[in-house]
Length: 323
Image (tube, rainbow, N blue to C red; front, side):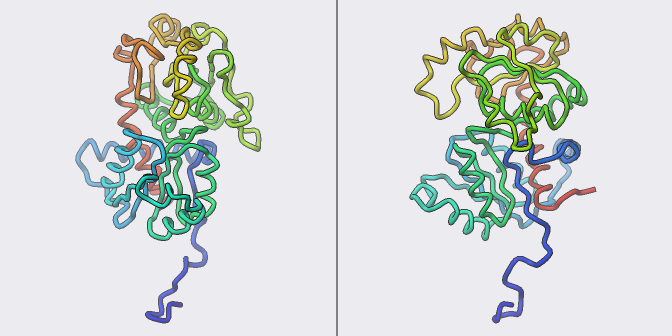
């Protein structure tokens, strides 16, 4: 007890365990579908100007070690729309950039805020923070995974075409954090994933597959991207050079020349196939302009939906299921 006022000074006994969202497989199929349903409910309120303040007096700490546009705007706007507040931190204006142990930062920040979003480089750094945090931690992007983006992508697919289970999704391009997360999502939600990457840029199963084997065997590889796209329901891609790999720009341009999502690839897919890209996009590199700006592209809905699914995610991590 606090001798000053008799109020308990520690976390109450019997409090529910803290949940994190560090990679897609942290949640079950049922939990993911709850989040998607909840996101639709929250989005409908947003679109009809109905206030939804489920997180009043809650504070989100956003920590950025990687630059961001969509992640910052979607989390910050989303938290304000839920009635909460936001603290924005970068390595340049906090002790995170001055060699303070991440464990110490986690212990301090999680005593002053209610939930933390981190966008950083190594997944191990995120996991270390979460291990020492008293509040939920969300992966806003790491070198290895981007679960909030894939959550938004799947929500967008459902909005346009219905449930994704049993459908065929094609990843064209680099075997990066997005590809890793699509692999995990296929294992959790039961859709077919095809991956086509240049030689030397394949998905690393040591990263994407969980220690329990979830994700293994959930995708098929193709050396020919056009062949991979045949009969697909969704084709998706990302930049050829992710943040942190800029020195490889020219090498990657040559290696990925045949992996530009173009009209030929879209024609090989089903007539009602969708195209997605997490943005920012480089027209003429990973995607042709007539594809990303064409009628099958849903990239703008996809970008907006980051905010809606993340609102549902923050609410779930802090309050649990809301029926």
